[in-house]
Image (cartoon, rainbow, N blue to C red; front, side, top):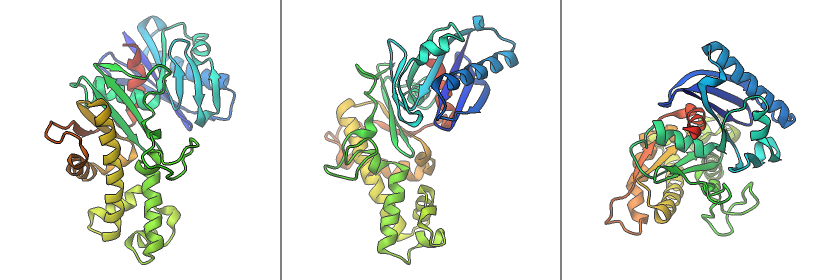
Length: 314
């Protein structure tokens, strides 16, 4: 049997035909055009599925289940999307709408959660019993696996680690609170910290790297210069690592997982980021004499959303 995985983003809908062992066999993609009515978006999902089945010469009888990863929260029992900020969705009957095209088991979960599930099923954390996946991008998302099962909580919101408050009365967050983890541990946070450093040091290498245009600063700008030994970039990098390590410690103190997996755009810094976090983490652990969880980089990249969504039904 095969599985269909759908990675629903604010920009694109990516759909994949996935084998039982988590391999993507075929992919199809179409723009989300997020301002459209939800029924139009679901129609395009169904069209992508039809395209994949036709190309693979399969029928719905060959498909065990369809899974969807969304940038929001879904109610597991009903398959309704409670909210999805990027799409402007509130209380949308996503499962029922897609079932009108394909009468198959349909599973829906948060996009970071399904990425973490993918890493557990077919990626770096597959030999663990518990893991936490942190996606470090524009914001911070998470996927929690406990005893080999996804933990989404009573209302589907358990993995919103990006909105744990890390600094009281801190920087305002898009969620309406202040001091959330994603304001300090995302790529957006690195850029903000770099801009602050440039304001204090107008002759710094960061500004020179972007020809004086602060709006062109990226996380990669900072990491590349820090790797080269630039002092100001290193200060920004170390400040970021401190916040990220504190966030990881909070996860360890609460869940004590076997592994923390770092994904998202920031994780492309690779061993440079990984080594810095591993070095600093023991300073914050409550029980430093105990083995600390393994800190690892995600392996599946952009395919994790499709793979994890597909394997929700395995």
